[in-house]
Image (tube, rainbow, N blue to C red; front, side):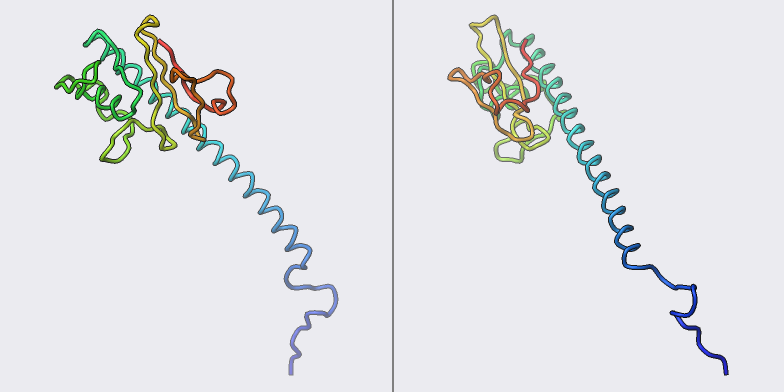
Length: 171
């Protein structure tokens, strides 16, 4: 009769000690945390790049609109801005059947109130004042969706709520 090998016999051991398992788990957790941080960082960079691209597309559409009508849309309402750039409204807000300047190149919010949306789901902001040399501002409120504007609708520079804003492109 052959005796079964003993787990405790001699120096031969089977399996891992509790300490070895804990060290291995700690290393795996650390690597996972690093990987998640890198993935999250890449995602936020991608969203920012997309917002910058959208803003450039909207600015191009605004310039085409201005060349066609001789003026920019006179609205701060995101829905009216979309309607203007899609050819449904003239500069004064009157309903027209004009050319589509924006097409489907920028994400829209769902119906019934379509507007141009940034990667975080917020409407892109637009401000225009014809009395200031046809100056317009175009921006995204960024990941937090907050911005602080003055009484005239322009973002206030240096305000903490505006620190993550993207764009603020001026013509």
